[in-house]
Length: 145
Image (cartoon, rainbow, N blue to C red; front, top):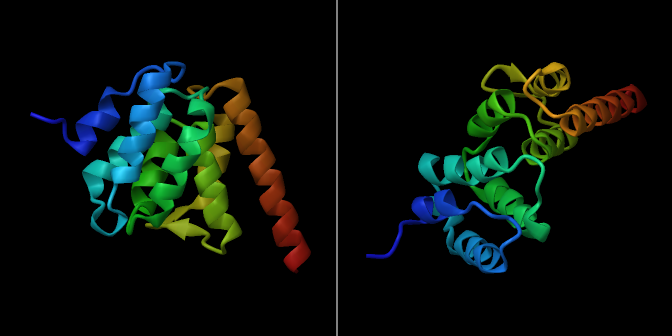
């Protein structure tokens, strides 16, 4: 019996294994964004969370772009960024801010970045990403006034 999309995403474990990366890329290509539900969104975000210091040789960017096309991903993204801040979920928060969205489900997106910058769970490089995004957003907001 073939694995479900969620199971395939969940089984990805080695971002340096060429066969697994190919499988991940193919799996992301199978996501039907108009029918993407909570389970699929959570499974894609969990790839970022499980491998916080990786980019899958660019495959993780495919996940990011796929997620951004899924309707209703934003609240789950905020949960992910607050629970386990990593480069990719913080990049997505920053991209939402760049598009003019300042809060999701009552949660300030700048506050999400600030939380990540102060998180004891986040790596040093993730905290630095968060601080850079905060500075970028403050610079944008200052330029707009």
